[in-house]
Length: 213
Image (cartoon, rainbow, N blue to C red; front, side, top):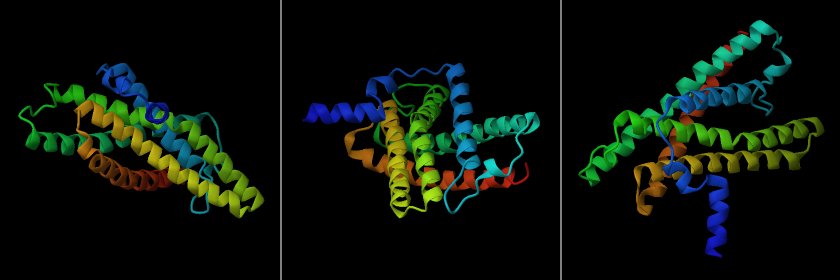
């Protein structure tokens, strides 16, 4: 039973070996940041719940608009990744400084480990994309049919997706920093709350940009 549970966790959060083998090469870092930005822009662009606007219906898509959206994705992806990674990295590093004599996370260079933290954040954004698509489809059907059941399903999927997203990040951070099991809950809460603030800020910023396209 324990092995089966571990397999399910590995499937959704990825194996620990996957995170431990991350390198600090720049190419995949840049690709990850771009994909984070594209996800952010797509999430805002095709917003379909009752509290957001479906900009896909009011924006006139042409070469210029698509180009501007891509540039927006680049900028937002960079802001999103850095705003998450730098504070979280510093907090965890500060925690390790108090508990271990090795102040640079087992001898790794600051820039190397920070690069890996950003990659973990990008990976979490990527693996949740299929779930985002499913949630978007459910939301569309909910609005089209005015189904209360689908509305509840949409809400439940959103909550599950958010926990999944933060769980993947937490696992990656715990592997990178080799944190003990006793602090994983604390790390999850840190990631959970910080991502909530960043998501609100990014959504607000994107709404300001999209209304001007």
